[in-house]
Length: 79
Image: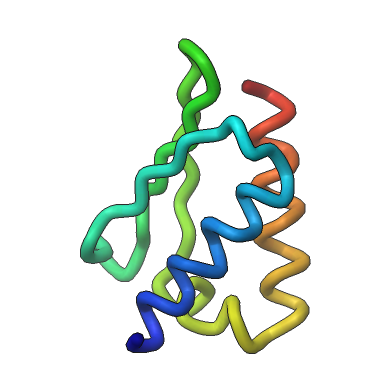
């Protein structure tokens, strides 16, 4: 598994940790070094942008995990 796949896998784990009913779509490749990620719960959908570097570093950097978890928690609570 390469760095990007590890990061995507960790991102999905974080989302499941916040709310297991949220469906997540992560693009295969970034656009301008950003991933536009879709989070859907029931009929509601929100998009968040996550930098390529943050996604790559997510499995290894606790500070990035905290930042991403906070972002996901805020978005999911708005769904």
